[in-house]
Image (cartoon, rainbow, N blue to C red; front, side):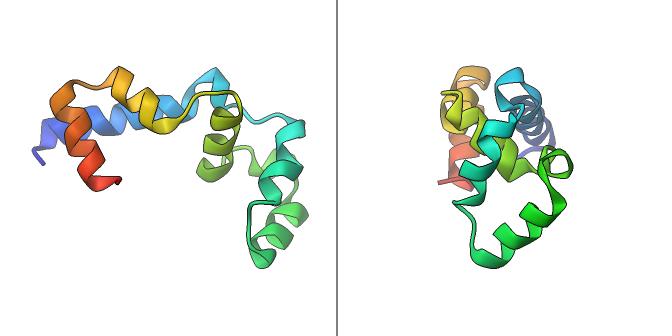
Length: 91
């Protein structure tokens, strides 16, 4: 992957996690915790909602709960060539 393509893909991914649909709400927290293994669940429950809001996995969970999947977002925000390159790295 060329450097410029890597940057475009990275920027689109960063934008995905910064979008409003990826902003976790308290109602997402327990649902997200239920998807984690026991040790991770215990860790994040102890950390609490506010401390967990920046966790990429939690932000993706929130975005998906708000009907914004990562694959669809990347397809919409990347050129066909860049999207194909991204898919090869993220099957």
